Length: 225
Image: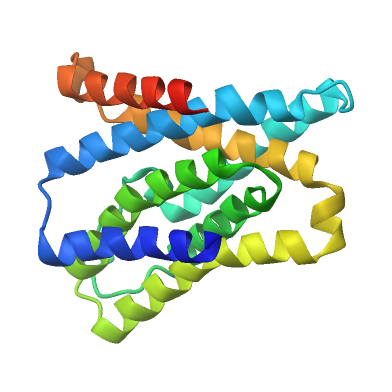
Protein backbone atom coordinates (compact mmCIF):
# COMPACT_ATOMS: atom_id res chain seq x y z
CA UNK A 1 0.00 0.00 0.00
CA UNK A 2 2.89 2.37 0.75
CA UNK A 3 4.20 2.00 -2.79
CA UNK A 4 0.80 2.69 -4.30
CA UNK A 5 0.27 5.82 -2.19
CA UNK A 6 3.68 7.23 -3.14
CA UNK A 7 3.17 6.53 -6.84
CA UNK A 8 -0.33 8.01 -6.78
CA UNK A 9 0.90 11.24 -5.14
CA UNK A 10 3.09 12.07 -8.14
CA UNK A 11 0.47 10.88 -10.60
CA UNK A 12 -2.15 13.05 -8.90
CA UNK A 13 0.03 16.16 -9.14
CA UNK A 14 0.72 15.45 -12.82
CA UNK A 15 -2.97 14.97 -13.61
CA UNK A 16 -3.81 18.26 -11.90
CA UNK A 17 -1.51 20.03 -14.35
CA UNK A 18 -2.91 18.23 -17.38
CA UNK A 19 -6.60 18.61 -16.60
CA UNK A 20 -6.94 21.64 -14.31
CA UNK A 21 -3.94 23.90 -14.99
CA UNK A 22 -3.89 25.34 -11.48
CA UNK A 23 -3.06 29.05 -11.11
CA UNK A 24 0.40 29.89 -9.73
CA UNK A 25 -1.21 31.41 -6.64
CA UNK A 26 -2.86 28.08 -5.74
CA UNK A 27 0.37 26.17 -6.37
CA UNK A 28 2.26 28.54 -4.06
CA UNK A 29 -0.31 27.95 -1.32
CA UNK A 30 -0.03 24.18 -1.80
CA UNK A 31 3.74 24.51 -1.53
CA UNK A 32 3.44 26.57 1.66
CA UNK A 33 1.07 24.00 3.18
CA UNK A 34 3.30 21.09 2.19
CA UNK A 35 6.44 22.80 3.50
CA UNK A 36 4.78 23.58 6.82
CA UNK A 37 3.41 20.03 7.09
CA UNK A 38 6.83 18.53 6.33
CA UNK A 39 8.54 20.81 8.84
CA UNK A 40 5.95 20.03 11.52
CA UNK A 41 6.32 16.27 11.05
CA UNK A 42 10.09 16.65 11.21
CA UNK A 43 10.01 18.63 14.47
CA UNK A 44 7.13 16.88 16.23
CA UNK A 45 7.90 13.32 15.15
CA UNK A 46 11.23 12.64 13.46
CA UNK A 47 13.56 14.65 15.69
CA UNK A 48 12.20 13.16 18.95
CA UNK A 49 12.48 9.74 17.31
CA UNK A 50 16.24 10.02 16.75
CA UNK A 51 17.02 11.90 19.97
CA UNK A 52 16.44 9.01 22.34
CA UNK A 53 18.43 7.73 25.30
CA UNK A 54 19.76 4.88 23.17
CA UNK A 55 21.19 7.22 20.52
CA UNK A 56 24.21 9.49 20.76
CA UNK A 57 22.67 12.97 20.56
CA UNK A 58 25.83 14.61 19.20
CA UNK A 59 26.17 11.98 16.48
CA UNK A 60 22.53 12.40 15.49
CA UNK A 61 23.04 16.15 15.32
CA UNK A 62 26.04 15.66 13.06
CA UNK A 63 24.01 13.52 10.66
CA UNK A 64 21.28 16.17 10.60
CA UNK A 65 23.86 18.81 9.65
CA UNK A 66 25.28 16.51 6.97
CA UNK A 67 21.75 16.18 5.60
CA UNK A 68 21.43 19.98 5.38
CA UNK A 69 24.74 20.22 3.51
CA UNK A 70 23.85 17.29 1.25
CA UNK A 71 20.58 18.91 0.22
CA UNK A 72 22.40 22.19 -0.42
CA UNK A 73 24.71 20.38 -2.84
CA UNK A 74 21.83 18.59 -4.58
CA UNK A 75 19.95 21.86 -4.90
CA UNK A 76 22.87 23.46 -6.72
CA UNK A 77 22.25 20.93 -9.51
CA UNK A 78 18.45 20.63 -9.30
CA UNK A 79 17.96 24.43 -9.39
CA UNK A 80 15.43 24.35 -6.55
CA UNK A 81 13.04 21.76 -7.97
CA UNK A 82 12.72 20.01 -4.59
CA UNK A 83 11.05 23.06 -3.09
CA UNK A 84 9.04 24.06 -6.13
CA UNK A 85 11.23 26.67 -7.78
CA UNK A 86 13.06 25.59 -10.92
CA UNK A 87 15.35 28.45 -11.85
CA UNK A 88 16.53 27.69 -15.37
CA UNK A 89 17.16 30.17 -18.15
CA UNK A 90 18.04 29.40 -21.75
CA UNK A 91 17.79 25.61 -21.39
CA UNK A 92 14.57 25.03 -23.31
CA UNK A 93 14.64 21.90 -25.48
CA UNK A 94 17.85 20.76 -23.76
CA UNK A 95 17.17 18.03 -21.25
CA UNK A 96 18.58 19.02 -17.80
CA UNK A 97 20.44 15.83 -16.90
CA UNK A 98 21.89 17.21 -13.65
CA UNK A 99 18.40 18.21 -12.51
CA UNK A 100 17.19 14.73 -13.39
CA UNK A 101 19.94 12.98 -11.40
CA UNK A 102 19.83 15.22 -8.32
CA UNK A 103 16.04 15.16 -8.13
CA UNK A 104 16.02 11.37 -8.35
CA UNK A 105 18.66 11.12 -5.60
CA UNK A 106 16.50 13.35 -3.44
CA UNK A 107 13.35 11.32 -4.18
CA UNK A 108 15.20 8.07 -3.43
CA UNK A 109 16.52 9.39 -0.10
CA UNK A 110 13.01 10.44 0.96
CA UNK A 111 11.94 6.82 0.87
CA UNK A 112 14.72 5.47 3.09
CA UNK A 113 13.22 6.28 6.53
CA UNK A 114 9.57 5.53 5.67
CA UNK A 115 9.62 1.81 6.43
CA UNK A 116 11.17 2.41 9.87
CA UNK A 117 8.82 5.22 10.86
CA UNK A 118 5.05 5.52 11.23
CA UNK A 119 2.46 6.71 8.74
CA UNK A 120 2.93 10.39 9.65
CA UNK A 121 6.16 10.52 7.65
CA UNK A 122 4.56 8.76 4.70
CA UNK A 123 1.75 11.30 4.51
CA UNK A 124 4.17 14.20 4.95
CA UNK A 125 6.10 13.02 1.90
CA UNK A 126 2.86 12.52 -0.03
CA UNK A 127 1.73 16.07 0.79
CA UNK A 128 5.19 17.30 -0.23
CA UNK A 129 5.25 15.40 -3.53
CA UNK A 130 1.93 16.62 -4.93
CA UNK A 131 2.89 20.30 -5.41
CA UNK A 132 6.43 19.32 -6.46
CA UNK A 133 4.93 17.06 -9.14
CA UNK A 134 2.77 20.00 -10.26
CA UNK A 135 5.76 22.32 -10.59
CA UNK A 136 7.94 19.68 -12.24
CA UNK A 137 5.29 18.64 -14.77
CA UNK A 138 4.56 22.27 -15.60
CA UNK A 139 8.24 22.94 -16.22
CA UNK A 140 8.71 19.87 -18.42
CA UNK A 141 5.67 20.76 -20.54
CA UNK A 142 6.62 24.43 -20.92
CA UNK A 143 10.21 23.47 -21.83
CA UNK A 144 8.78 21.75 -24.92
CA UNK A 145 10.41 18.41 -24.33
CA UNK A 146 9.15 15.43 -26.34
CA UNK A 147 6.24 13.59 -24.76
CA UNK A 148 8.33 10.42 -24.47
CA UNK A 149 11.00 12.36 -22.56
CA UNK A 150 8.44 13.85 -20.18
CA UNK A 151 6.80 10.48 -19.53
CA UNK A 152 10.15 8.77 -18.97
CA UNK A 153 11.36 11.44 -16.55
CA UNK A 154 8.12 11.50 -14.54
CA UNK A 155 7.93 7.71 -14.43
CA UNK A 156 11.52 7.39 -13.24
CA UNK A 157 11.01 10.15 -10.67
CA UNK A 158 7.78 8.49 -9.48
CA UNK A 159 9.51 5.16 -8.85
CA UNK A 160 12.54 6.52 -6.95
CA UNK A 161 10.86 7.01 -3.56
CA UNK A 162 9.19 3.55 -3.60
CA UNK A 163 12.62 2.16 -4.55
CA UNK A 164 14.10 3.85 -1.48
CA UNK A 165 11.40 2.26 0.69
CA UNK A 166 12.06 -1.18 -0.81
CA UNK A 167 15.85 -1.05 -0.46
CA UNK A 168 15.72 0.30 3.11
CA UNK A 169 13.60 -2.68 4.10
CA UNK A 170 15.56 -5.38 2.26
CA UNK A 171 19.22 -4.42 2.72
CA UNK A 172 20.69 -5.02 6.19
CA UNK A 173 22.85 -1.88 6.13
CA UNK A 174 19.83 0.41 5.90
CA UNK A 175 18.02 -1.57 8.61
CA UNK A 176 21.01 -1.44 10.99
CA UNK A 177 21.63 2.27 10.51
CA UNK A 178 18.04 3.46 10.13
CA UNK A 179 18.36 6.04 12.93
CA UNK A 180 21.43 7.63 11.36
CA UNK A 181 19.74 7.64 7.96
CA UNK A 182 16.61 9.18 9.47
CA UNK A 183 18.77 11.91 11.04
CA UNK A 184 20.34 12.56 7.64
CA UNK A 185 16.92 12.90 6.03
CA UNK A 186 15.81 15.22 8.85
CA UNK A 187 18.53 17.61 7.68
CA UNK A 188 17.27 17.31 4.11
CA UNK A 189 13.69 18.01 5.21
CA UNK A 190 14.71 20.98 7.37
CA UNK A 191 16.52 22.55 4.43
CA UNK A 192 13.68 22.01 1.96
CA UNK A 193 10.78 22.96 4.24
CA UNK A 194 12.34 26.18 5.54
CA UNK A 195 13.16 27.34 2.00
CA UNK A 196 9.59 26.60 0.89
CA UNK A 197 8.24 28.66 3.76
CA UNK A 198 10.59 31.63 3.57
CA UNK A 199 11.72 31.94 -0.05
CA UNK A 200 8.58 32.95 -1.89
CA UNK A 201 7.48 36.13 -0.10
CA UNK A 202 7.46 39.05 -2.52
CA UNK A 203 9.25 42.09 -1.05
CA UNK A 204 8.95 40.37 2.35
CA UNK A 205 5.30 41.36 2.55
CA UNK A 206 2.94 39.57 4.91
CA UNK A 207 0.73 37.16 2.95
CA UNK A 208 -2.38 36.25 4.93
CA UNK A 209 -3.32 33.33 2.67
CA UNK A 210 0.14 31.79 2.94
CA UNK A 211 0.09 32.38 6.69
CA UNK A 212 -3.24 30.55 7.01
CA UNK A 213 -1.91 27.64 4.94
CA UNK A 214 1.16 27.38 7.19
CA UNK A 215 -0.82 27.54 10.43
CA UNK A 216 -3.40 25.07 9.12
CA UNK A 217 -0.65 22.54 8.36
CA UNK A 218 0.89 22.99 11.82
CA UNK A 219 -2.45 22.52 13.56
CA UNK A 220 -3.33 19.51 11.43
CA UNK A 221 0.01 17.90 12.19
CA UNK A 222 -0.22 18.61 15.91
CA UNK A 223 -3.68 17.08 16.32
CA UNK A 224 -2.94 14.00 14.20
CA UNK A 225 0.61 13.04 15.28
